[in-house]
Amino acid sequence: MPQQQQLVTIQCPACGKTLAGWATQCQFCGAQTGHIPRPMTPQMQAKRELGMSWQEIAYFILAGLWTLSGIYGLLQAFGVMGLGDVGFGAGFGGTFSAIQFLLGLGLLTQNEWVVYIVRIFCYLQILFALLGFVFSFGAESTLAVLFFLGYHLFQLALACFQLYIFSVVSD
Ligand SMILES: [Zn+2]
Image (cartoon, rainbow, N blue to C red; front, side, top):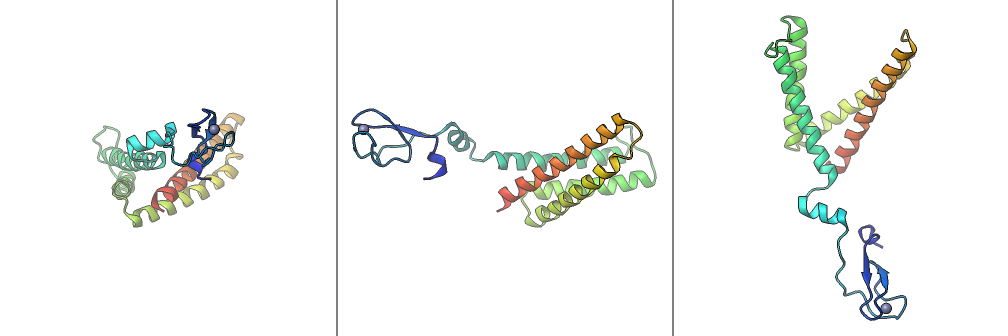
């Protein structure tokens, strides 16, 4: 049976009993039900209204966040926010932010090379998060250990979520 029709029910035109959406014949009176129009589930309706799946929406939110954090980092690096410092740190931060900004734009335009690069970033992030887990136990207090574990868990979850979204949207 098609997965989308699992939650949909129809009414038998002959006996009025409730039937599963995939039924082509009434199980109670044997009437043909294949021609009855199927109502849409709320999920299908939402998808039709937006024309996008939630994964696609999440994809564009993530792409927007990459772009925005790139812009934010650039502003910081150039001292526009009053937080930046001049020197190596600012130069490094600026370069990193510029890359992040360009990757964000690439994601927004669904450039497949950019998606590929960002996927590699995600795998690196997972690797660093796993290393972070190990090093978290070296922190001085229990509170610090918990804080670092939580932070790396968040990084890990975020990277996995992005990989999931990219695999759904780009395929
Ligand atoms: Zn019936």
